[in-house]
Length: 251
Image (cartoon, rainbow, N blue to C red; front, side, top):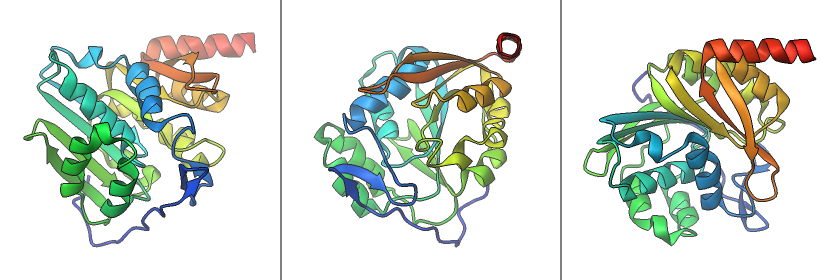
């Protein structure tokens, strides 16, 4: 992944729809009206069976598509810090095309005072909004956040990672189809450790199909709030191929 460059990015615009943070670039909200932090815990932490899966490990690596408000990261960091059996080091990589300025993050994070200590540390190291990979060492170096600023279609193929968990959080597929395109999701195959898990709020058929093609066995779980379903998946290429063949046969 390249080092940060001088190429400036378009920052996210701070706006709201019925008091919920809203992305004007995509015409969609950043999280459910029923609660952003609760959604992060239900969909992404529970969807990846965390904190259990990092317990007892020396390190645990994760990848997120769509940093957004940073809620998923802050919720994960908070859960890691609260877990006495946590891994010694947490590596968290996140891709974001439209990052917020630090001042906007401060205003947004004020809605969740229980995250204040984590938000303060994050904002203290918040990088200039330039394209490339920005490495932030947090919690006395035990938490490493690599914030990759740029388009996911350009950045994902350039990552050199092996991940145990994935958060796919790029707005609804209908609003942001580029984030969910099969050529984009196919790159997860090269980044996943055996048995890696994945979670996303979207349970759309094309997303399930693209993830199966990338080697993930998908299962629908109860969604957050009023949303009926979400997806949880496990990286198992042989089983995913068999699942795909059954889907075609039953077709």
